Image (cartoon, rainbow, N blue to C red; front, side):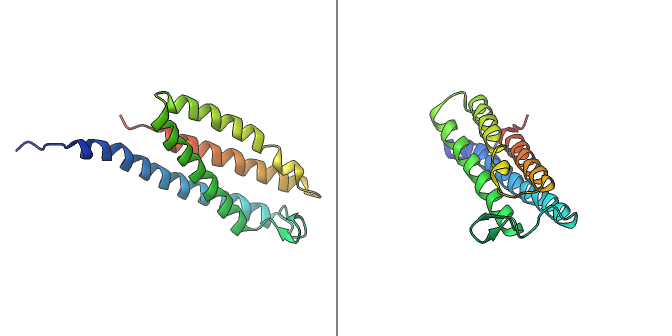
Length: 141
C-alpha cells in the first residue's frame, strides 16, 4: 500500500524537524550554561556582590532565562530568513557570528567582575552560539 503525502504533510516535516532541533538547542544550551555557571560558582568566580543592574547579581535563573531568550531569538531569525531568502543558512551563520563577536564585549562591561567571572560568561556565550548554530543549521540527510 502506497502512502500519499499531501502538500501540508510535505511542508510539516521540515518544520517538525526544525521544532525538534530548537528544543535540542534549548535543552543543550540550558544544561551546558547551568554546568558552566555552577562550576564557576563552586570555584568562587560568580560572586553575588558583583551586580549587572542595580541590586541584581548574575544568578542561575538569569543565565537560564538569557539562554532561552537568545536561542528562541536565533530560531525566530532563522524562521524569518527561511521565509524571505533562499540562502537562509549561510546568512544565519554570518549573522550569528557577528552577534557572537559583539556579545563577547558584554562581560567586560560588568563593573568589578573578576577574571574568572568574565571567562565563565565568555565561555557561556561561545557554547550557546555553537550549540544554537549547530542544532538549528543541522540538516538530516
